[in-house]
Length: 175
Ligand SMILES: CC(C)(COP(=O)(O)OP(=O)(O)OC[C@H]1O[C@@H](n2cnc3c(N)ncnc32)[C@H](O)[C@@H]1OP(=O)(O)O)[C@@H](O)C(=O)NCCC(=O)NCCS
Picture (tube, rainbow, N blue to C red):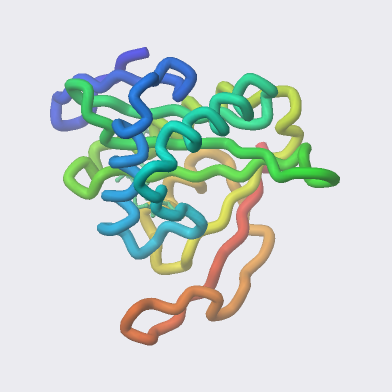
């Protein structure tokens, strides 16, 4: 699938299933992790674990427990989004994540990716939820536009490097 950003760049959206070079995605994750303070759960992938990471994710996708999309500009990953089911008795609940390289922010890519991943929700994903930190106003606007409603607030669960606190907000897709 292709889409055009507000800045005119033509972007390709692919499922992680169609990616064979793990480093293309793990490099992206590690770089965005380093430049963003607002990622809730994403962790860097250790050198040497890239292929295993990709294999695990593809396995979960093939079972319908994960949907994972990447946005590519000229074969460089610039954004990603995923729906990943919890395990066990919460396996019917999927958690949404989205991240975009800083240089591509405010071009409509985050919104378009989240909209697309929600369309590809699997039957296992009876409920869709997410977490974000309260200072992340742009993320909140995307989630509001697409039908998420706040269901819980954890006071001061986010602690920035400078020692200040933010709340962690839990939203669920209601529409
Ligand atoms: C949060 C993040 C994903 C936002 O991505 P982005 O690509 O910069 O955001 P977008 O440009 O898509 O959205 C910006 C705005 O345009 C809106 N928008 C964009 N395209 C739209 C469309 N076609 N129709 C309606 N609204 C649209 C968005 O809803 C949002 O609202 P606003 O217009 O009121 O400002 C990005 O800042 C990021 O990756 N941050 C670091 C990681 C992170 O924080 N992830 C979320 C953790 S929970």
